[in-house]
Length: 317
Image 1 (cartoon, helix red, strand yellow):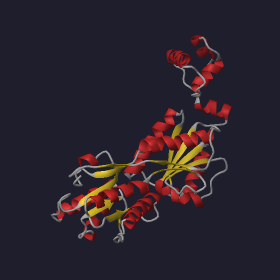
Image 2 (image 1 turned 180 degrees about the vertical axis):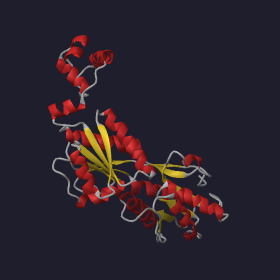
Image 3 (image 1 turned 45 degrees about the horizontal axis):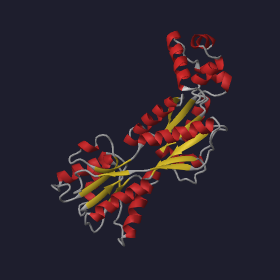
């Protein structure tokens, strides 16, 4: 670091600030220091920095599965946001429960952890190691932790209202698994929108987020003319089931999904859906956690990320 300082013509403290991503360095000086680092092949030594600062500059990500599109996209968004803040990311699965995942992260001396989606439901009953700061993605805002989630209920309400405004007497719902915060919130938005129009909600048909469960649900939605699906993968399966029955989309049945996965625009027909801002979710979660680690923020409250209805050809407009 001293050699870099001499090459750049700055103090060692300035080099330290650049290495640690401090905003207290003007852009021209930062550029000069980074150029000197590149010329000299300087790389910060993470283990040495951990000994000096007491922090590993590593955060954990706790998931139950990476098989779902939402979780895999959150992994990418979180990894990119962590790198932007100068933190490494280590991923652990909660296959043996969140307690075991937290214990594993504590052994790796991470500075904090982000808990995703299905694993979030287990946090309130878990033993959180002392000093492990947490941000939970998809949990109630009164959970006692910093919470970040999409506006699931608002997105579901927009989808349901869109279908009703197209002239349907009611909207059926292909829901996600019971106990999932995201699924419960999307179901709530659907129910409240129907109730607000004086419509008694039909019986919920429940899937497990997979396209296979969406295909199986087709047999239980034979009388539906409008279906709001809790995610795009189940909507994909439903589209196939409807095609197998000879029912046309959108002429006979109008369908809306949720997530706006990259392939949704290439479904047959292209899927009307509710877009989640996965990049924004990752950035908010990482920012809240890093601020707590570095003493710039607390560990309560939450952030709700807006959703957007994206009309395509699976609805008539």
